[in-house]
Image 1 (tube, rainbow, N blue to C red):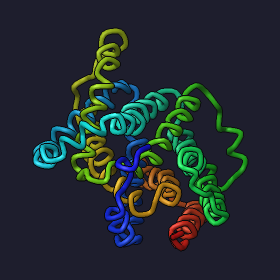
Image 2 (tube, rainbow, N blue to C red):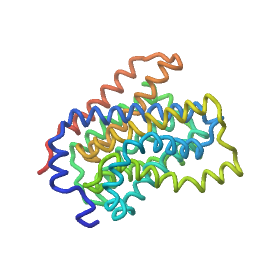
Image 3 (cartoon, helix red, strand yellow):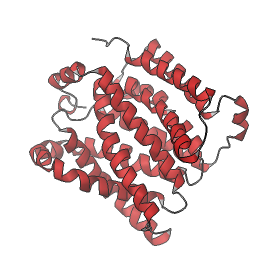
Image 4 (cartoon, one colour):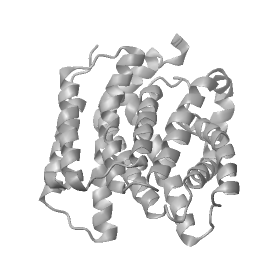
Amino acid sequence: MSSDQVSSPQNRSTAKAASPLLAAFLLAVSSACWGGNIFIGRAVHAEVPPVGLSFWRWVLALAILLPFAWPKLRRDWPALRHHWKNLALLAFFGMAAFHTSLYLSVNYTTATNAALLVAICPVLVPLLSWALYREPITPRILLAIAVSLAGVTVVILRGDLAHLRSLSVNKGDFIMLAAAFFWSMYTVLVKRRPATLHPQSLLAATMALAIAMLLPAYLWESAFVRVMPVTQESLLAVAYVSIFASLLAFLCFNRGIEVLGPNKGGLFMHLIPVFAALLAFVFLGERLQGFHAVGVAAIVTGIALATTAKVRR
């Protein structure tokens, strides 16, 4: 990767000057939005087809963003043309492939299994960072991953190892494993985004590329599988995933990763099952119990271990 494809010294200085606490808050917001994304995907899977939901979320999100991003897009057009291959990778891994795979997986597996498999991402991210950029994996990061992953396991298993017997593996789980790899690749690559691009330009350009990538699959799904229904349920689902899981979540996530880096920032994916449990409490009447507190405490401890580590100069 050439030097003009990575963050400039000025950009890195700005990122370091930004508040790690604010970056942590932004990453927590993105995890909350994506916890709802899994919840929504599972809730409407019987009515809304996976490619259709993924395609229309980006169409609506781009339509909302474009009026605000247009001046930046015009200004950044030379950089967009120059870095289109890098942007295409971000669009494929983070938007077209990951979210479509997620929606497809919850047609066959439970939201619990999907949330558990998303928690693999913070384990994959340091490995991919090392493979692509030779970023060191410190003992502190390994400890943070282990502690945080233990907290996820407590939440998923509801504090009882006996629940392992009820977790069955099916093709939806394997699809979700692929989705976890796609998202881990996005997490690693977004750190190397072109430094001169405004965040809105980056998001709008990758959304447009993702829509172009999804269009053939959407047309095929509509012709041979099922069409996207126009109902109150489907419209509300598209509205949520467009505004919260697309616009808000990606803007927050990209900025948080820019400040904290992929190895530390990726740990916030462990908050997704926590927010999924909170949504189940609010909308499905499920009770919050002691194991939730234990799991959240372990997750927060793991994240704190990673984000409070001294930056290596």
